[in-house]
Image (tube, rainbow, N blue to C red; front, side, top):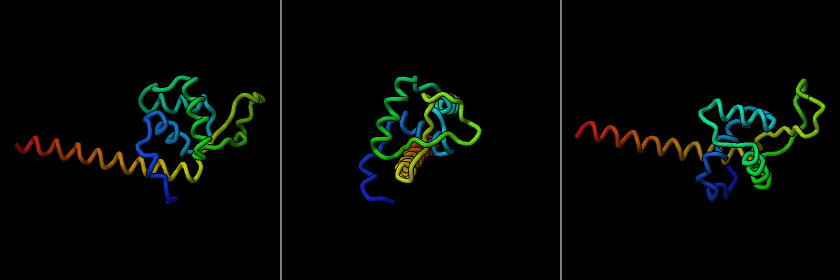
Length: 115
């Protein structure tokens, strides 16, 4: 894992949601919004998404790509993005952090039920 990614953890929930959606392959902004919403809520609006995408590109975690075959729409405004290897590393670190946090919460629940 590239050194230095730890300094970016924890990620904002909106960044985690977008990066998780993009981890499955190239998506347009509309597809990202749909994926985030179907995964549990609408924490993003279009303006927030596009500002966040700009930040993620600046970090090198997301990059623009050509539309996947069969997804060309002739609309130059529709941009597709994917998660970069660095983005995957950061997302993996965040997932590990969240798993540890959930384990602590479960430990608290178990301790309470014992007492």
